[in-house]
Image (cartoon, rainbow, N blue to C red; front, side, top):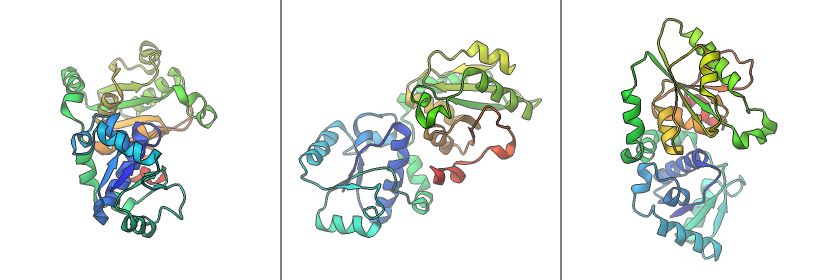
Length: 271
């Protein structure tokens, strides 16, 4: 068994564990995500045996007291299949930490299993699902991920955009789909986002704030056919669920075209 330590925020953990889970399925190794055992309880994963707070505490104790070895997956020497399997032959339980473990072929092979594992728990998203169904129908649902907070400093603020820039991106998207009705759903970690300003500049009235917890916001974005936002695993993971088309905003001068949108399978290997 491999206890997987958390890495970063929710969707970093999602991608980290999905790769390790797929590798475990291929090699007959049970895996447990420590982070999804206690913190992010929005997914079916949290209903599985061993994915609970007691397991998290046990794993934390075993790692802290060095009763099990912890494998640092950032180092290519230690993250090879051969090395991991050799460690498991010597001891049936280890821990794994880090972000760099990648098995895209296995991710693709076990795509359906990963999707079932990270399916949203109905009781966690029922309110948002009912809310979205209550709104008037539209030809296109566009999800906008506005990431601020830590993005003010991450990469020197490269992907920190103000409301006017997001409004302009929505306007350009609307021009691309002239003649079609569009609903815009905003998921953001910034409660100061000015929706009325965005409506005015974009020329779009049907703009709605998700205003949910991370699981609810992820669900709302995942229900859209198109997603735009700064480079982030959050919008990337959202695009996974229903094969949404994703445009990562690189600058205020981005051109919005059909070709600028990409699918999850075309993007995730770059992350």
